Amino acid sequence: MTIPPRLRRALVRLRRDLLFLGAGLPLHMVPALLFLWAATQFAGLTTGTSDAAPYLLPIALTLLVVCAYGLTEAQRWRFRTLCGMDLPRLRFRENKRQWAYNCLIGPLLGVLEALVLTVFAAGLSAATSSLWIWTLGAQWRLDHRGYATPLGYVTAAGLLVLAAVPALAGGLVRLENVVGRAVLYVSRSEELKRRVEDLTVSRAGAVDAADAERRRIERDLHDGAQQRLVALALNLGLAKATLKDLPPEARQVIEEAHREAKEAIEELNSLVRGLHPAVLDELGLDAALSGLAARAPLPVRLWTDLPDRAAPPIEAVAYFVVSEALNNVAKHADATRADVTVTRLGEILRVVVADDGVGGADPSRGSGLKGLAQRVRSVDGAFRMSSPVGGPTTMTVELPCTT
Image (cartoon, rainbow, N blue to C red):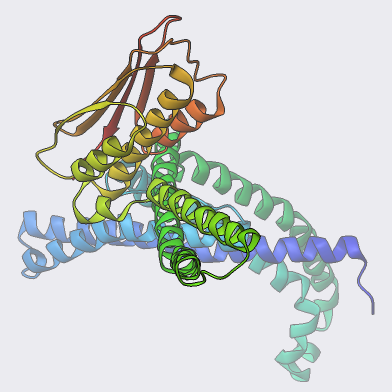
């Protein structure tokens, strides 16, 4: 026999609702039973009628406290598995919510669940009375020849009760969903706070992953492409020095190839240093910035005050900021000098880059300065820039460093 789709959906929904209520009944009634046990032991202790009360009362109270918090996870599983509602994990400091639901509201819901399940059991028993009446034997039916009429009334009443059970069960499930969401759900401010914490952790992981990827690229370039270019330049230099009897055109080609190989090595060195210089890991930010200032195309005055090293991602961001800032000064500022000041003030690493150029730099227009600002904000840093037309230009970056 094929069950109509609408009836099938109703039966599936009824089964889910009854399972939800049946699973909630013991969870809701256990705290009430423990409370009655604790109250009985307390009464026996105060009246002196129970010698075991001094030992059983602490056990009852301990179990009551454990249930007040431990049953929350069971309730979360019940709502998630049977209703598809994912309640957030409450922290221990949110004890009032858990206590209110498990020990105060829960027993009341347990009473309603027991009533609905009792009505369902009674209706099912009455509706099927025509079937199980045959288990009483033929002699009983002969002795009660008039049982058919009242049995029909009982069966009809059972069917009416069963017809009302889906509405009762569905209404109670919706009520529990509303109560559970109101009591066991975190507030909007707490939810936003948790979201901020999750985003902070995920962003820190993304920053660490990007830094690790830059280190890998730097290592691969240094150990792979750079070594091949060095070998190529050496071979070309050796050919230029040893092959004296070549035609002038061939020697010119070798010389140009040798020069271009050396230029490629220099560009690759600059690229590797820009990604993540090895000296930054080995000697720290002070030494890395000293090398950066020495290689700059304009005079750079560097002053640092770094009593302690910061976290590697923070040092990498500081190095990247100074490197990009000096490149921008050399390309666009038309400056004669630059000043770089790096200081550690408590848990703040402050980087100031100033130049005497023409000014007019706008972080909202140039992609380079916008990328600098985004790189700084990726570690919760602050980026400020003052660059009036005519100069001077001062860029200030503050990075948090707790280590």
